Length: 136
Image (cartoon, rainbow, N blue to C red; front, side, top):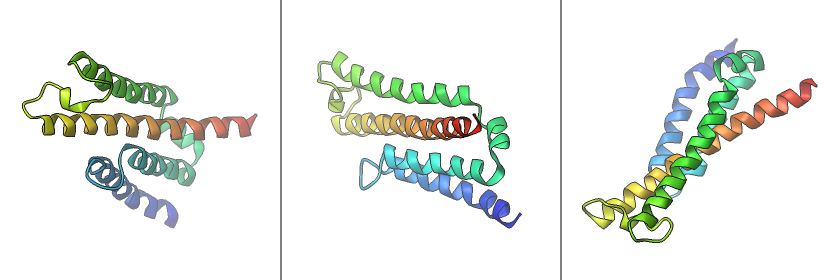
């Protein structure tokens, strides 16, 4: 009961820190992968503390499958947009914004968000797969 109370109070702070790591990934240490791992870990913590069945009711596997694909799609779209605007793959400065610095910043941020979504979704899917194999 104490662990559940502490977990309920801590998860929002863990997720806020994950968003901080994602948002500042282009300026310093961190980024989409690290932030995605932190965010995914907060969801896994919920599943471990409150139980697999409650986690399955709250976190639908199809939603996380979709989110994993969505993150890859975001990454792909940004890369293809760079090519479309006469650049190479992930040459962010070619994106059509007023300033090349702004283009690079927004392009990198979009990539970081896509990676974070995919990493956190795949981590939750892995936990459900591992738990399913244990049940068999």
